[in-house]
Image (cartoon, rainbow, N blue to C red; front, side, top):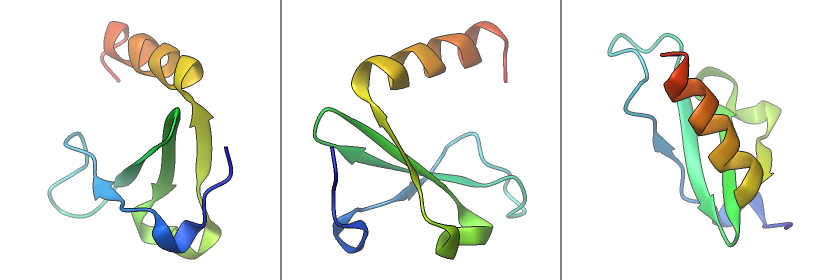
Amino acid sequence: MFTDPSRLRFRKSSYSSARGENCVEIAELPGGAAVRDTQNREAGHLAFPNSEWVALLSIARNRNL
């Protein structure tokens, strides 16, 4: 599931803080998603296969994270 990072189109999560703190950006990947920290973009991103991404979102929603 490797994708050239320069080709990813990240968008800010709707759950991110309006003041710019605690911001996460998400990009869709073929068969998954990539996540990075808005304030540390140069650190790269984490890629998740679709099954893991869905599981992560499910857990976060159930715990109101």
